[in-house]
Amino acid sequence: MTDGTRAHEELLAVIGRALGGETPYEEVEGARADAIHLGTMRRLPAGTSREVLGGAVDAAAGRVAWVEQLTGEPQGGYVPVSIDLHFAWGGQHRGRVEVPTYNPYFGCDVRFMRWYGGTLVVIYREKHRTLAMRLEPPSQALTLAVLEDRWAIDDDTVYFVSQDPGLLEARLLPSLELALPLPALMPPSGKQFWRHAPGTLALAPLPPIATGETRDAYFARLEAERSQAHLVPLPPREARTFVPAPAHFRARMQELLARTVPPPLGVDLLVGAVATPFWKEEQPVRTSYTTGLGRGCSPRYLPVYWYQRLREDGHADAAQQWLHWLERLAVLDDVDPEPWTRADASDEGVVRTALVYLRARARVLAEACRTGRLPKGEYCYLFTTPERTRHLEEDRLRPPGFHEVLRQLVARRPKSISESD
Image 1 (tube, rainbow, N blue to C red):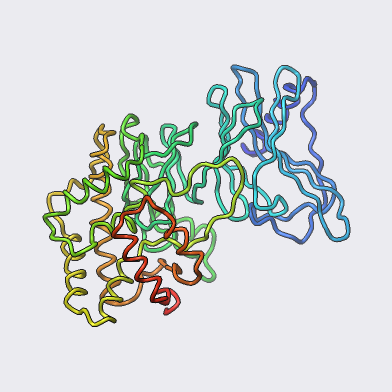
Image 2 (cartoon, rainbow, N blue to C red):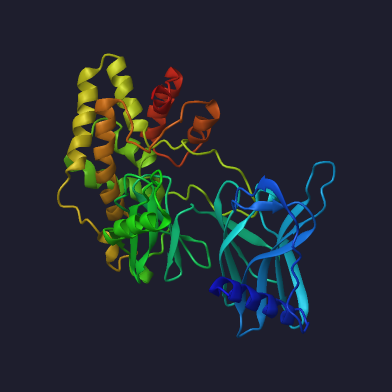
């Protein structure tokens, strides 16, 4: 019997006792169909089944919560599927909440469940995204936060590899409030991401499997990559709290970057297009499942489009001024490379951390200006549809200079850079 099987049987026994029974909670195994759960990459049961996907036990309070998938007999080609969170204690079933997903037919992979006193947190992968769900049973009111597929927990903070390249984002547990984002050197290909030690995360490449390679040989290569991982020291727990302050952030960045002699609209554009995670909650917590705008909608490459627009309009000197400024930012001195490792939860600590990130991204932006191409693994489809820019045009928190650049670019209807590859 494997440790996983033993733990699952123990969970079923605890559920049975919490419901007032003397036998383990009963699962029902159904025949497997050809369809694949996209959230779990397993075959979907085709007939009646009940499967416990994960659970959390609060032994001190005698409470248990579990995520359960029910499937029914096919009806005209349709397979009824439901995925619900249940909770029980004191011999009674205390409630049920539907687990928010794009569509339960596509499955749910429960990856983390824990009680924090009377608060329950569940992290799971559904068809499109990894989500964190918070609720306080028996209340059925819930909040949802969008994470990413690569995540790790340290001291009740969940860190995840952001869609913004070179960045780790984070949320505090169990509140799901924002935590300070961290710059991080990312591997050039896929990412292994894990907690290396208390207060330290690790990133390493995830190499593809070679043709004919054995399982043992591949895992040996994985371990070799892990042994040379890039380590990210984390802030002390008291310095992880992060409250966005747009006006202060923009004003302070103007002061810090004044010595670099920014071109017109320069600081506003970088603050609004590249440094957004340091002053704005771009994906606020929600109370229900919603679809997003999709990957590739970020304005992170707007400075490159602006450089190209200046060149196309015959403003070669202004374009060169932009490029040279990015090059100066990329080698900016007197920047603490890890300001977040100190116990500084102030707005200044946020700005100094963002400066490290902007310096790293300035090098990437400058290279994209010179070549007209994005780094391998990065993409931008910002201008493919009006909807992809409309939410930016309507976002009044972004700086005036950002909006001026966006207005001029939208009027020109540029082709998205990734469409030219």
